Image (cartoon, rainbow, N blue to C red):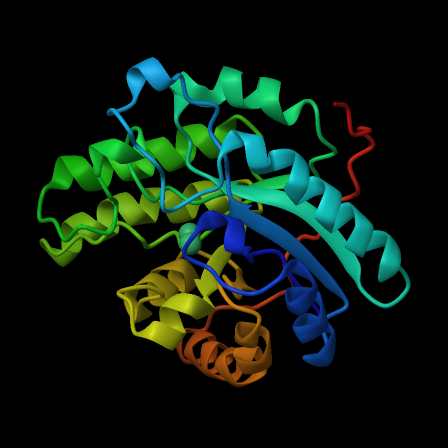
Amino acid sequence: MLANLHAHTARCRHATGTDREYVEAALAAGYRAIGFSDHCPWPWDPAEMPPGYRSNVRMDAAETGGYFASLLALREEYAGRIDIRIGFEAEYLPHRVAAQDELFSRFPLDYLILGQHSFGDEWLRDWSSIPTTDESRLARYVDTCVEGLSTGRFLYLAHPDILRYEGPESVWEKHMGRLCDFLRERDLPVEVNLLGLATGRHYPSRRMLRLAAARGNWATIGVDAHSPDRYAEAPALEARARALCEEAGLPLREPPVPALSRAQPRT
Ligand SMILES: [Zn+2]
Ligand SMILES: [Zn+2]
């Protein structure tokens, strides 16, 4: 792949490395375009949060300016060698969208990807990756992804198979088939997530790739880098991902690199 739009920074508190190290590692691995899509800040009202709560999965809203300043400077410095896009990976949480848009409107944001890691605010700890046999949870996950993507605010869906459903295969197929059909109609890719592949997570699953192939979808690759060395490993992991897609009969294409935002940074 020449492009990757799924990567994090140390600001999310569970990734490592400097912003520059990510750019250098991507260049060395042969990438021509990369996007930073760190876990999005939410401008929470402290009164709603558990006392003393501090996220360990995302930056604070106050760090947003530093994120853009650093990446805008790297974009300039590396111009002509590698294209840099600035985005976030965000859950679709309808009750938080307006406040988040207000925050983002101050920055030249190029794109969002949807990563539905949880239902509701994170301190509820209602994670999508908790194993479940509850069909209503699976249905709700698919409904939320479809509703979120329908708003047009997201460029693509990260790790579509993050909801860990362990009930009957026919039930899984009924709902995930709806998701695949929706993605196909919108010409959105099914992400094959290299972090999941590298760390043996339940995604990307063979059943997802097979179902997507049967529904006529196409796939792309997300490195989901949480450390710069994931870029060094990406070519080898990509070869594994490619083999899985070929086995499933799923076509693989480059991710949809967005145009640069025309918004100017405001303070
Ligand atoms: Zn992460
Ligand atoms: Zn994610």
